[in-house]
Length: 295
Image (cartoon, rainbow, N blue to C red; front, side, top):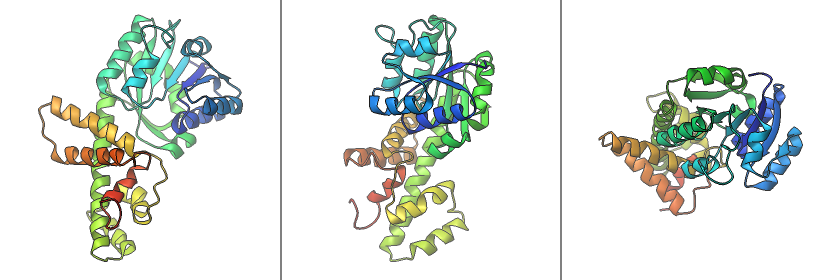
């Protein structure tokens, strides 16, 4: 698939840094598209790409199109079956869909892409903004193995750990479980540190003890100090945590399982959104548990 013309739909921090990484690796970024036109304009100038004014123009300009959009509705909208759509003139194209979505949406996108003569691959990301820029994303892919093989050289320049997990939908299921467990760990850490603060404990010392015991976790490394010092600059938003927790909770309900920790965590992140704190990093869940913050 090299050299391939590559385009990005969605130029937020993840999409933009993935595009920058591929440009650095010598790939041709031909077009970018985003409803936030100022961000798309700036990225297009930086990369020497065209800022497409329609989805159909994106497809016309590229062989491989990455979509990095926020949710199910946005994903289905860019693959609309009527009106402006990435599906226009899509025969022979490959769509690499990186958002955390309901597995059924990935399946529907694949159905629509195949009907248009295109290939579709889910490439779920279990990493954040610095890894997108450095090309060290953990990418979990699902879809036809032949499609995966065609774009593997491109994905390899984005990822330090590239896995094909099976047919379309499997990667989305695994990603939902990854984020479910991560969000539960984040909520539990916020409660532990919040209780420590209420007891008047030295939180620096408490975090050190956590790190040497069964309370240790990746979340402690990434979020513990931020929770303590209320440094909630956004790498993975509370709003996205609420969305992803809902995806996992729904999958559990559909499977006939009652997962009380997942349900409680979903409610905590839903509460953050209701309190207009959804723009904070997921570490901002500590605002609900520390004394003297949001009750």
